[in-house]
Image (cartoon, rainbow, N blue to C red; front, top):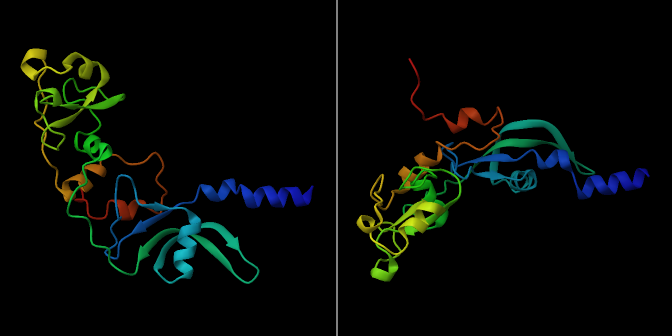
Length: 194
């Protein structure tokens, strides 16, 4: 039975899956806020071993090899600076982030899809300036009609977001779990309250 326990622990280290490492750029800012730049503990340990990162904070848990014991990194900082993307990719996720995960017609949150403001059937293109997040009911209500014909109006006109704007937008949506050791690095550039 002892052998079975060791084998199942190695294959399914449940406790260790709960210990991701926050990855910071060389300037001590997260590579991304949303989704938050996290690595599984295995990747963080590998990067430490390859001397690609410095450990800033650690968990209490350790991992062992026959010759080494290392505390699992909680926060790591890259030794080489990674230049942030200047161009924002036109993806469904980035579109929803730009629109704050909210229907641009009624303001509903949740079951979102996207809608062409000028319908494709009427010559509309798939671009930042013509696509918005929409709930299913507003999308069905609008169909392939114009805004005026459907009786809907936009909360904000669609536009191409800047990379820094999208990064800052991601800070408004923290993940469900923030380890105590991460907090100082996630909000270090925020304005302090007087």
